[in-house]
Amino acid sequence: MIDRRAGSGGLRGELRLAEPMSRHVSWRAGGVAERAYLPADLDDLCVFLRSTDPEEPVHFVGLGSNLLVRDGGLRGTVVFTHWALRNIALGAVRDAEGEIYVDAGVASPKVARFAALQDLVNAEFLAGIPGTIGGALAMNAGCYGGEMWNIVRKVVTLDHAGELRERTPAHYRIEYRSVAKRCHQIASIPPAAALNPRAGLEEWFVSAVLALPRGDGVQSRGKVKALLSRRIASQPLGEPNAGSVFRNPPGTYAAKLIEDCGLKGRTIGGAVISQKHANFIVNTGTARAAEIEALIEMAQASVKHKFGVELEREVRIVGERQ
Image 1 (tube, rainbow, N blue to C red):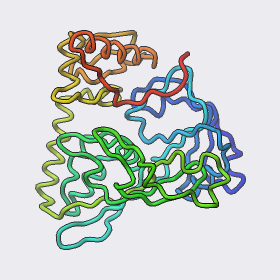
Image 2 (image 1 turned 90 degrees about the horizontal axis):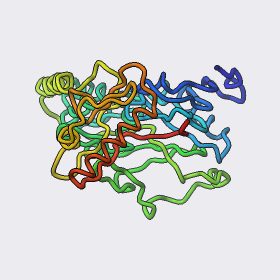
Image 3 (image 1 turned 60 degrees about the horizontal axis):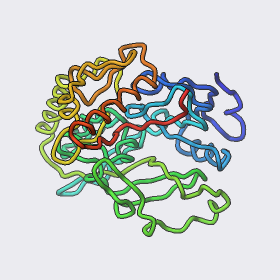
């Protein structure tokens, strides 16, 4: 349902009510969001956030490639970044390196290809990440030996008060598949934002500047092509899934532990642990979010029981149980 009031009060985006999140997550399952906003651009998004209730939950979603929304739905407002935050451009280029400016809504594989076309290297691993740059920043996404924050020079964030800030990696504690603000590194809240009790407490990435070495673009494009071929061969890309469900524990692989528990092919309702890759759960077409979550919990319990290893989720689970 579209609420036409989004065009008033200086807003230029589209506000939707009771938006089915199954349309916006790669698992193609889950409940509805109370509200969803499709901003026209970054300025419009800032205006929209300033207009929201400070206590209203806000969720930023890119391609929904690592997200499960429970069947009971999602309170608050979802902001879809890939509708507006989609610019990518070449920045300063020096003898040894170059910079790429990229918005949070740009798909990670697009950045890998763009960098290679500019003869910039070390971003090839992004071809193996199905989500957006915003999601990659938020979780320090990585694969095939690369990690997002290894190539970040600076970022711009946005908070609930509509305030933009520039940050550097020094502002964050960056670990394997984890990024958190270092509170002692965060500057004081600007006076204009102080009226909003949530100002500065929650920030979302809206853009980044990546620093990459100059190199052989032809070779880089070959690596990107090889990584994409490897993904196609080893992952169930033709079926609705959310990529790797679990982080790899130290010294081993989540997929191996799950497979060694005999769980490949295990089904609950319309959800199945992929026969192709045990760290993927696939929606065969009729899965409910609860069935996907039940398989996640089954895998965690089985691996814990057999190997004493706690599998940590890489995917986010939000919303209310039905």
